[in-house]
Image (tube, rainbow, N blue to C red; front, top):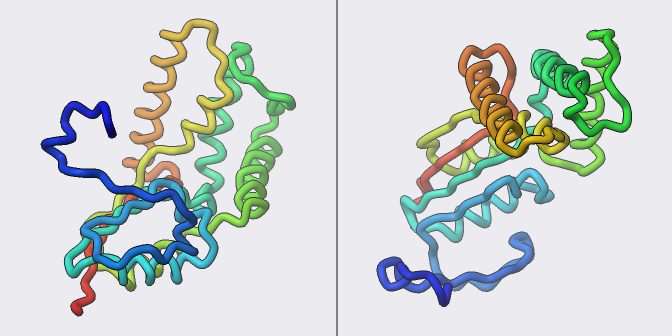
Length: 199
């Protein structure tokens, strides 16, 4: 904040770091609340979103960019499998246990590992987030975005940084294309809503 050359144009930035569910420090209304891949971790998202509604001014906005692990389906697992197999065979994927050549067995394993991780971490499912968002706020925008590619590039080990970056961009573009063609179910959604509650 102190070194921002544009702070005089933006005005003062005020912030607090705290557990949002337990935070009660606001005595005023806000124009915007943003959840960036955090709401899926917060227990009882409906209660948290009710709190957000009470904090927003009328016509105030909420933006949620959220991970919906339970949307990962068999088609997504097959796409993931083919990309990962190519990387493993090139020696460009860090893996303790390589995938087998048996598509059915490997896809079942990928799908189970993906969902088991979400269950173990008690992540909220899509409907547990989207239901309250839709009922508490007037939906202005909903889109699905690439995200599975992040799981691939986190374990990618390509010797050339330039090649790795190019491959990562290619994966993101490929996932975006298969989402747009509805060839896979995406797992990252972007919701923008407006507080319709009038005080």
